[in-house]
Amino acid sequence: MKTKTLKKNKVNVVTLGCSKNIVDSEVLMGQLKANNFDVEHESLKDDSSIVIINTCGFIDNAKQESIDTIIRYSDAKTAGLVDKVYVTGCLSERYRPELEKEIPNIDGYFGTRELPRLLKTLKADYKRELIGERLLTTPHHYSYFKISEGCDRPCSFCAIPLMRGAHVSKSIEELVKEAKHLAKNGTKELILIAQDLTYYGLDIYKKRNLSELLKHLSDIDGIEWIRLHYAFPSGFPMDILDVMREQKNICNYLDMPLQHITDNMLKSMRRGTTKQKTIDLVNEIRNKVPDIAIRTTLIAGYPGETKKDHEEMLEWVSATRFERLGIFAYSHEENTSAYQLKDNVSAKTKQARTEAVMNLQQNISLEINQQKVGKTFKVLFDKKEGDYFVGRTEFDSPEVDNEVLVKANKSKISIGSFANVKITSAEDYDLIGEIV
Image 1: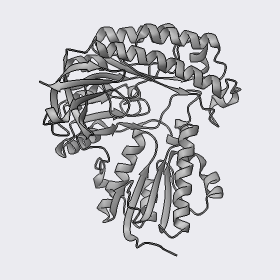
Image 2 (image 1 turned 90 degrees about the vertical axis):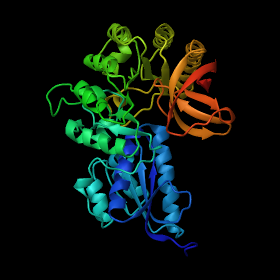
Image 3 (image 1 turned 135 degrees about the vertical axis):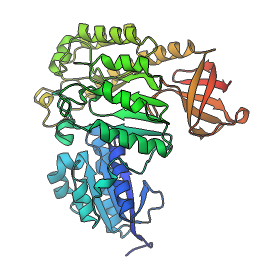
Image 4 (image 1 turned 90 degrees about the horizontal axis):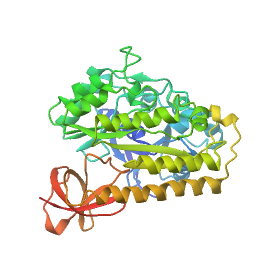
């Protein structure tokens, strides 16, 4: 028996996983709104008649979170708290037969490229004229900006190609149109995302064309920051660094997941590079853009990783002094080439190695931050939290990087605006400052 009145034609979209999923949910919400649905993102009211869960299927923890969320709303449907529940995204793409068998109460499972079919099921039209338009779930002053879909890389540990398919670039014309629409509606920062930014254009322009795209995007009025996420080291197009130097609104920031450093690990991971090539690339990037902040991501406990491999990674992290760094414990993923290998590093050892790298990085981050005390930086303010306004420099991406804190009782700041901040003190991952 229903315990509350549900709003017919109201949809609650729940997003799990990465920024690429966020963009997909925003596009879905834009289409639904254009079809006269009342749409909310992760509503706390639980008064929607329809729930759509956009799932993640990347690694064990993310998959479990997605499964738990599906079960929660399946139970809510059984209890009469919602009428319909649909599941889309990566987990649904990868495990649809298993999910249909194990959780049959769901009204429909859809893959990562089945938006038109999902809309048709909801008796909504897929409006092609809305391509590039979406309902932002982020603060309006920044938005994730997906320039391509899928991936052609052969990395042994990664299941993304299984869920997202082959690489498909959007055209420069389409992306410029989308960016102009975002800028018109208040977006000041574009965070470029893809499974591999540096592969952009190979399929439609027959060459790596990220530098050309950046030139066009940097000319758009209102876009003050452009940030690059998820670059691949093998075949890295150095010309994007020239554009970064030339265009003031392209942040001196690069997210480039390197995964490991020893030759045997890189070879087994099918990364298409070596230790020395990786070291040379990082050095060349820093030589070309001396002020750049490089964010990288590593994997601990990949099959066959020895104590020596781990120690070599620690030595490299210590010597390289990445401005930003994260690390995952290896997750043994079905249907990847690494799944044929024995997952022979224990969970305890994976965790210990992950913590060792992060403890090292914490000290590096503190030392780098302390060097910023007394200097002034342009800061974009994202929110007010407690007694502080919270913002970021060009060297920081939202959610994952450092933040700049300014006492709210000493400053008047508009969320979504820029201000110059003089850094007065530094912590491991935060800077404290005052408006100048």
